[in-house]
Amino acid sequence: MKTNRLIIFDTTLRDGEQSPGASMNLAEKLEIAHALAELGVDVIEAGFPIASPGDFEAVEAISRQVTGPTICGLARCHAEDIDRAWQALKDAAKPRIHVFLATSAIHREFKLHMDKAEILRRTVEAVERAKKRCADIEFSPEDAARTELDFLAEVVEKVIAAGATTINIPDTVGYAVPSQYAGAIRFLKENVPGIERVVLSAHCHNDLGLAVANSLAALSEGARQVECTINGLGERAGNCALEEIVMAIKTRGDYFGLETGVNTRRLAATSRLVSRVTGIAVQRNKAIVGQNAFAHEAGIHQDGMLKERSTYEIMRPEDVGLHQTELVLGKHSGRHALRQRIRDLGFHLDDQQLQKVFDGFKALADRKKDIYDADIEVLAESVLHSGPVVWTLEALTCSGGSGSVPHAAVVLWHQDGTIHRDASTGDGPLDAVFKTIERITGVDIKLSEFQIRSVTVGEDAQGEAHIEAEHKGRVLRGRAVSTDIIEASALAFLQVINRALLRDQLKLNPQTEAVKKVVSG
Image 1 (tube, rainbow, N blue to C red):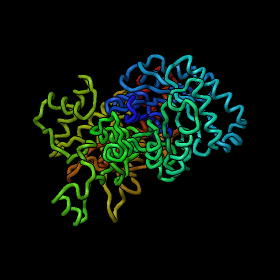
Image 2: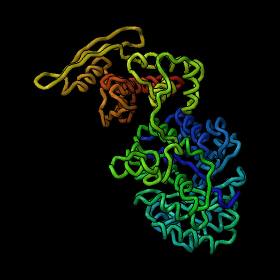
Image 3: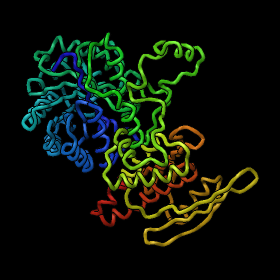
Image 4: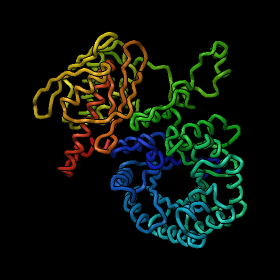
């Protein structure tokens, strides 16, 4: 490997999924894994196989179906963890087992109840066991940033001797500052025999907003792998954001002298995909991929941009896949043009799925004047994540206003072929719609989060409704899009109802694969 080549290790599917509310089902993980491969990341950490049957299934499926990147699975320094990880990874063309154990004094005393000698013994045994199954072994001394440097160096030396090929230095709780974190990398390079034989890696959390800064500082001292996530997704305040680290390297090549294998023009599309799948919106002023990242409102900025773009832009929006939303299709466009545009947007649909998108596209073209890329994306995404339903929305009406009692009437179709109608009042039109749906379905859910946002631009833009609700102690999500935000909200709410009912069906019949796909969302 060239010393100026930076390895991008993406952990969106493992560390990123640990972010509250970001759990993904198998189909969603596969979709993101394929997108990461197309993006050009070097390593995909696909999950923690022993954590759950779902995690094992996801790592195994990604290992078999996703080609290009190294596929990595996480394991504690336990024999059963390592064996389980290898079972999930064994079909990958390029597998990696990632072993970890905490090393800091606070973790040794309060979490592990182990002394230094026991830590050393466990780490060596684990790496040796993993090495017998897989040539590519990564080791992480958890909470390395708060570990005594002499002991950290001792641990790293032992695991290199045991066969580790990548040494990751995690700032697990986001405590480090750039000079301190860079100093730890420098200390290891200067004091660990054999350090030149391995790749040093940075894994930084963003609790103090320093994850990217700390990772870049590590690169200045010779680290050549960065562990990161799309949109900076992750526990608490998140991880180092992949799009930020990649564009920092690309934009400041004069300073870092490094390169990556990432196709930066796929960054915006991958960011949108992860946001849609997880339901976690990207903040408008988010660096690189935020809605305002390349927006200029101040008059003096606009004047400068008109005269010379580089006065206020250090990157081109095209370089990250952002552009002015383009009208690419109309109501008279054919199936072939739609297929090509869907491929350009990064979706992989079979003929049956394409037909469903085409039907939805024609219906949408009759409802709104202009069709944008984002409209096509939500149609494709809805087809990819469709499945069996108990209740379908047939029609709804609602009214409200000052001096009147808001009310709604709803017509639903049940999977047994019957039509059900009811009406209700509420605190507002949406509340009335939700109460009516609950009355018809007999399902009572507790709404915990409700958001509406515009998908595209213009007066006839589609609105996206996102709902999180609790049912029998479980959090369920629903998302729907329509040019009518009341309809979008009703569809999202009904999606949650369906998932609640299908979850109950799954308990009665655990082997129903179609139901399993839906309720895991």
